[in-house]
Length: 118
Image (cartoon, rainbow, N blue to C red):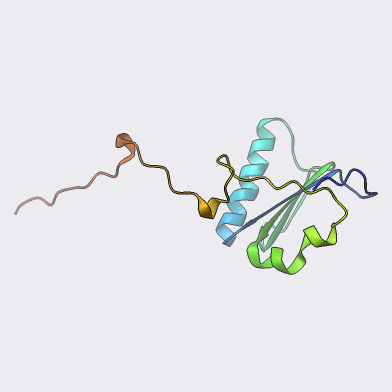
């Protein structure tokens, strides 16, 4: 969400959601480690214990990682309805649930062990 034209605390909100607490934590950790690799640390973080709504505050950009139920309940997109919204898909431009898994390379195939005779 582009909030620059609104009088608010940040220029942008990035909002995403996940199906489980584990996914919420993984997304938040990936964002935090990716920004830290570029020398950017969050000014403040919130929600890393409860994992229903994690906030990573980078001052101009605030990232909201929701559990799907929490996102439906809080509906930030509706609350900030005057903001300019940009919907971003994955690399293929499709929601993750609509993607087909990529075929495994031969080197990635699981190895099966044969039971020894005897």
